[in-house]
Image (cartoon, rainbow, N blue to C red):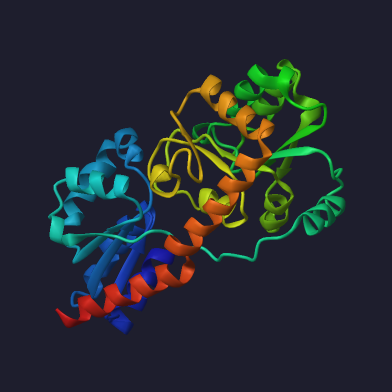
Length: 304
């Protein structure tokens, strides 16, 4: 019914521009857009094309409908490179990074207030991972990394796992118990108040095995967190290794553990990376910049 309704809306409204986000919307919208043949068609790819390898029919269909797009957007250089490899003409591809709001950084006094509200002690070391609980987000790598350095961590430390459970939590809880880390790990689940958990944290980690360009990474940086991210997708386009955070190879628990321990032991580096990370987001990945680029892109298309 929804597909039929979309066809009806397109037939009735005849929009000037149709913009598709994410693969499902692209497939359904591209087919439905035959009812609005004069519309300018734009597609945004926001992830690496790993899903095409899992669904070859989807891959071939996407390749087919690419030719009917006026413009295809990628949200990282890594995504743009894959679009080039799919045979799309370079003049039909454009890079527009994700953008997020940048809150004012809080001081230690406010951080302690947030921790009190969340029932955490002021002195505890807090590491956060803001990511849905699904295998490719690398939670297991993080648990193994923490196990390798557990003897050198302070007595009081906590890992906050914030994100929707994709049916993976039981496996992670069992692994945490097996590694004798369960007392130090809190599975928060889905929350709309991600900001409070970021404000309460000292270090942010994103050990994903695949990403297009991670909003979670930008969110951590926008709260002044020194971030450690896996070298996948566009992560290294936001994090300059050793300047505003650390980049480590994916699937590398030992290296991940080494970088976490370095930040745990050196508060000065932690603070320096956090400030630089915040400045990076404010300068290069603000929501205002993102919106401005979309508006400029739409206007350019209208003038063709």
